[in-house]
Structure formats: C-alpha cells, structure tokens
Image 1: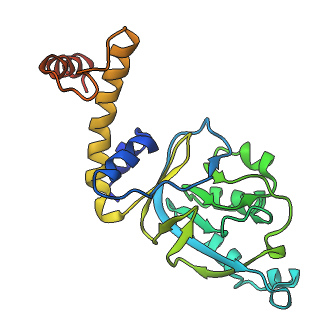
Image 2 (image 1 turned 60 degrees about the vertical axis):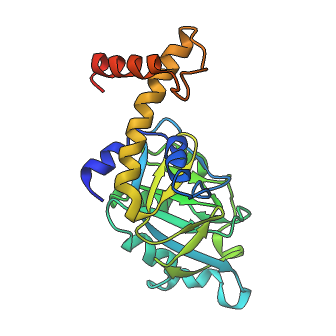
Length: 236
C-alpha cells in the first residue's frame, strides 16, 4: 500500500468507505459486532495478517501447549509484520478470549498497526488504556484454550461475517472496521476523500438551515457551484 493511500485512509470514515465499496458491488465489507476498545484513537490502517481458530478439542488443547514456541497463536504474534493489522477469526464467539493484554502489548511494541477479533479480549480494561487500536465484540475472561484452538496463520478467514484475505486493507475508526480488497484500495481511498469533502460541505450547509433537497445528492446546479466555491475557499 502506498504511503499516500494510507494517509488518505487515515482521514476518512468506515461509513464513507462502505459507500464507495457498495458502488462497486461490495455489500458486506464491514465487520459485524466489533467495536473499538479505545474510540479516542486515530484511524487504524494496515494490511491484514490473519490467525484462525477452530473449536478446541480438549485432548489437543491443554494449557501445556503454550510451552511450544511454535504454538500458532504465539508464533503469529511474533511474525505479524510491522504496519500490519492482526485479524483473528474467533468464530464470532467471545465466551473465551482471543488474546489478552500481554500479547496485545507485544504486538504494539513490535509496530503492528492494530488488532481485530470477532471474539473478545481478556484484560480489556488494560488493553483499552493502551495507545493502540484494538477492536473486539466484548470483554472475555477465560483463556482462549477453553474454547478456541489456534490453527492457521495468514490464511483466508472469516471475521464478523466478512471474508478477510491476507494483504487486504483493514481500516478501523470510532465506529468499527471495514475490509478493502487490495486491488481496489487506491481508487477507494481517492473516492472516499472526495466524498468526505462533499459531505463536510453538506453538513455545514444543513447546520445553517439548508434543505437536503437538491443538495444531497447535488441535483441542482447551484449546489454544485456552491460546493466548488466552498472547496476553493477551504483549500480542499
């Protein structure tokens, strides 16, 4: 992903990105039932690096598996690339934790861009205090081993009913997380910047008392002229 594209994605909303994706026939790119632990942080942007859990089988998933340095969860935390978003398929099951504050802190200090799971995090209050974007369904105290067995690293997964392929672009904001196919990211980012400028203009005019009719969408010539003048005045 180009640095300029990442910069554009840092300044747009997941709602705007979803609309741009919808125009291209992609209707299901917003990860369901996932929320930020710390909504005060800037946008999260990075390429997806994935971990897949399956239902745990008790004879294969005792707590002693963590002694193995090659355990998939531990291995994935140490191998997730700098600048990537760590995306976890926890089967939409937050009854057991996808990870806790120690592993999330390790990802943060390694330079990962953020973490997303469709399950839950344990130590959620501590994670919420970190200057690091994290998204989950809800807090979860039990260790992942009680219900989840880590299996695959950096393979296609499902997260919150969205297909996530390694290398897809993941964007998180104060509302949630959207997944952009990598081959579309430049044009989606460009369009989202344009849409954001127009919607900021519309919001300003609506707050001034203007009707949305003819303005949103801009079916009247005056609306288009006013927007052009607004952009020139604002330098946008």
